[in-house]
Amino acid sequence: MTADENQWVLAVAEGDRQAFAMLVELHLHPIEAFATRMLADSAEAQDVAQEVMLRLWQRAAEFDPRRARLSTWLHQIAHNLCIDRLRKVRRLSSWDETQNTRLEDAHQTTQLAAHHASSGDAAPMASSLADEQSVLISRALSQLPERQRSALLLTYYQALTNREVADIMGISVRALESLLVRARTALKQALEEKI
Amino acid sequence: MNQQRVAALIAAYGSDSARWPEAERAAALHLCESVSALAALRREQASLDQLLDAQQVSTQCRVADVLGKLVAHTCRTSTPTMSLWDRLGLWLMPDALPGLWRPALAAALPFVVGLSIGVSNPEDMGDWSAPEQYVFAPYVVDIGEADFGSVEEGMFTDG
Image (cartoon, rainbow over all chains, first blue to last red; front, side, top):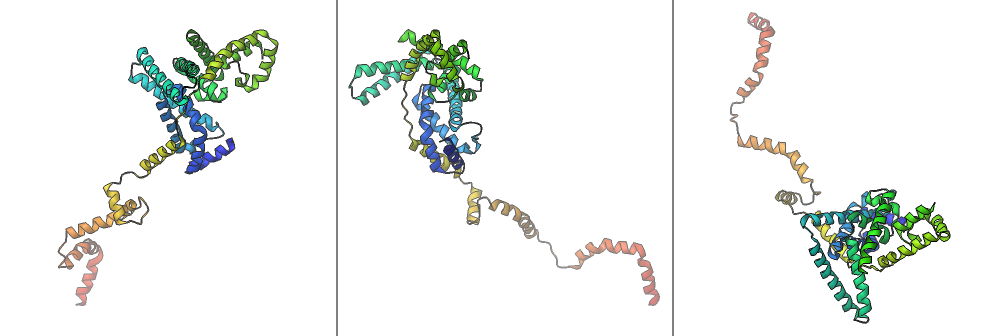
């Protein structure tokens, strides 16, 4: 797959839209999932995912397969875009806890309503509990410090090796492990209080 | 590999050995089987892993959206609004390569300027001898100063 991917990237660098479509098909959803968890905002995450794919089209010639896998390269772009957006949001708004919670509650309500509508209320109680739990985890993740969140999400969900995640974040593997331990400890503590 | 390192791996990567670094996995698993404290540590981390595994996100982006965005972006960057000069160039040389009219026009500029100066400042050239005199005057003076006298002498003596 990696060898094929590298060929496709070369083709994309020469303007091959079919090769681009195949790469988008492969990488769009994992990148969007990462951005969704990172930003806790699905609209923003969609923007980021689309922007990453646009960068792939524009900068395919810069990709060096000897230095990284395509997935790692795309995750690095996505990670940088997410960090930019998080910092921008922090700069633009005071982002007080009350507002944050209100937004998340609204998001939670929307998600639950959408889920119930799609599941046809077959087992509303069970799914409601699962959804509530999912929202609590999502909120606990979003309250982790930025670097701990990046480390945990990239390592746990994105099928990247610890070396790749360390490269994406520009840190050593030891520093990554330290972030992971702190992230898991904080997450466990936050969830134990609520679940 | 020692117990401390395995404990660090569990604390960082969780209970699932598939998430541990590949190079250390086999040795770490071997230790886990023989040390009960490490097995307990794995069970403790397993509860958090279950919660993390349960946290699913739905993705809504469609490949078609991205391709549409790409087309829009390509249109925006490859066909910029043409300036008046570009339109003029295209009108003058419709078959020329894009941008070729600019160097062609630059090359023709000295000719155009010269022609326009000549046309706008016509000089009365009725008597052609006057300019010729001005042109050759220094040459004639130089020759006169050098050895014109002897020739004149010859001329007069012959006459």
